[in-house]
Length: 220
Ligand code: CA
Image (spheres, rainbow, N blue to C red):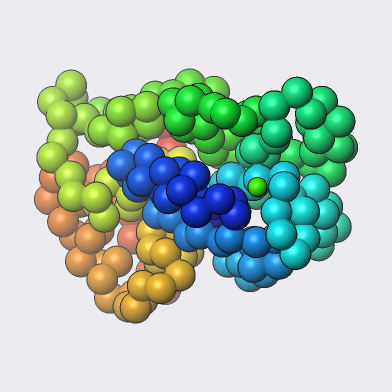
């Protein structure tokens, strides 16, 4: 799951990055509204953390432009405390949720998890697929109750596939959601990771759809 952070305060931006990386996400960062708007417009994100008060273009304008341009990714707004007008403007502009500053990092993480799950149509923080269980809160997976030892790349791959059960996911889509913008992308690495994942979870759960990509079995 790939997240964009748009926050001009360098310390806060870094703290958000650290927390999101620790939670198993891939992270891109922007420090002003123009850069943030550009990234959100050109790269696929599973969610965005967007500050309202930004240089060059404010967060509400960034969000309005994305929505006008048809970008539908979940957006969590960071608003100044007690600025109820920001919250109203943000929701009108198409924000999915907001957190007022100063916030507890745990709250940002919990709200992001909920937004990403809802966007994928899952109501609970645990996602199941046959014997597999993904605990999005702890960033852990288990099979038949036994916890899986996964590398961060394997976890990202499994999490993306489990959020999109029953759908064909192409290699390029996986790459876009598993790596940040600076990564040297090579689609052959996806095959390697799928191979490793299958050795840990069995061959049946991830189907190869020839010429198109992969499909995780759908658990209903
Ligand atoms: Ca700010």
